[in-house]
Amino acid sequence: MLDLIRAARHQIRVQAYAFTSREIAEALVGAHRRGVDVAVLADAEMNRRPSGNRIPNLLAAGIPVAFETRYNAAHNKVLLIDANTRAAVIVTGSYNFTWSARERNAENVLIVRGDRSLAARYLANWERHRADAIPIHQLPFVP
Image (cartoon, rainbow, N blue to C red; front, top):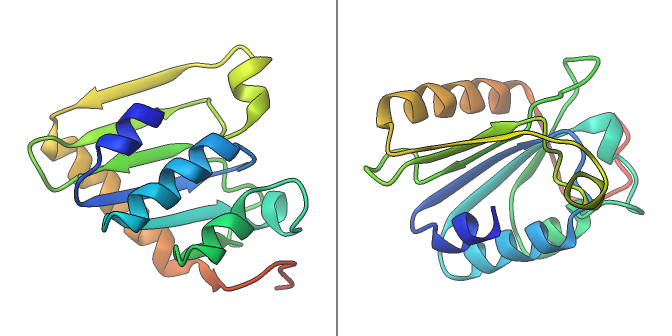
């Protein structure tokens, strides 16, 4: 996943339930700093406090973050990379963006490369969720 983020050239869209992975946050910040358009949607309840998650790191770097509050759990785990190009990549599955997912859990991850049609549908879904989400600028988040 880190290699995919580091290879992004134009755009990264993230949907995350839990976001505690230092490595993924650093890779997203690195992509943002090299000019990639990065934006994140995250579950409000799981990420509302500054301790224990990496949302503050993303915000400090200037990455737009919005919290989903419409659902009991915004349980999506999606990474879209360069969705509007021939090099489109979709990453999805049970894998949360957490240390536990990487080190302790049994997880699944599906990586789809080069399917622009499917990537466009995932991107449209991301944009629909973004339209309902609340942009945040700092934590703690109080709706």
